[in-house]
Image 1 (cartoon, rainbow, N blue to C red):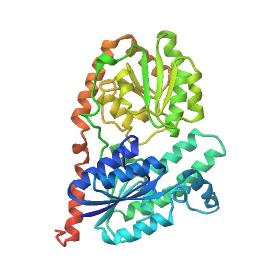
Image 2: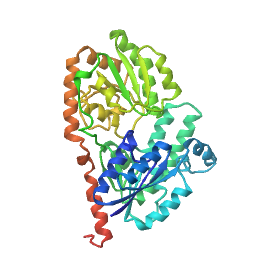
Image 3: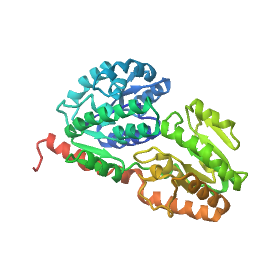
Image 4: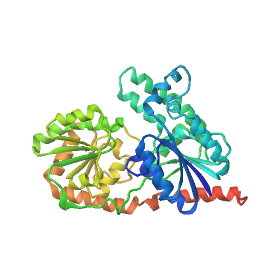
Length: 399
């Protein structure tokens, strides 16, 4: 088939959450189908990645430049309307023009995120909506974590985007979620629409354990550091939890690994035992040096790739319910869950003081992801959906 793939960012390289899953989807589709990518380009790195996809991978990739800062400002008049700001920020006449040209030549489309659904909604071409996280519900969580006036802004976005999602999910052939929990929430709030679970995977052969490199007391967090849930979680850990850990384990130190750290995150480096790296070439270098991986996210939906990667590296991992709820493992067996600051600190301290317990937890974590989160196994449910679309297009629909 000819598949038109829409995404907010160039789906390469797989160095952040959304790019990891979009690249794996494109990679799998392109094995048997002709894929055309239409996406936004945020910077020169995106343009380089797009050229790589075209020239080295042979995948037609069309990019539309976007400046998110300017787009956010330009979208403010939408506050006087019932349109969600998300559709203003990611709205584009140029991208719509490209989609209008490519869609008639496509057998189906795949929209990654509800904002990209706006470009193909109601056009008649079969399409799949991939909801990496329940976008509207994310804004509801943001509203709960912020004070007025931002709480009011986020609450408005939640409600207006939910109304748009109701239209989008009804128009799609099916709606894809990365965890069973997300699907349950979806079916409860927007019942009666087709849905399926396609779990995120992890590159098992890329993330491999090396316990000999672990540094005693070294705690590591990885993630893009201008993303609110990551920022909020790291601030909470560094200011409230780490001091309790260091009171018992004085040599404990915390490294925040990830690109685009905000001023609030950079300021954490002034605290005792905290390092902020900014962008690094390979997060595995830091994960290998970690004694414990932490995921202190208090706002999260979907599955956290950072957690899967840490588990694949055989790292004992402590995370909140929000950070681990998308991982279909067993708390206490594959990772430790703690939501209160004292409980989180106690779990980290126990692992640092008993390396043997940490090693056993890490070994079980590695075995768990090897068994459940290989990419081919995770993405295989989509094969049947594409086959159904193909059969219907060829007039072979048994129904």
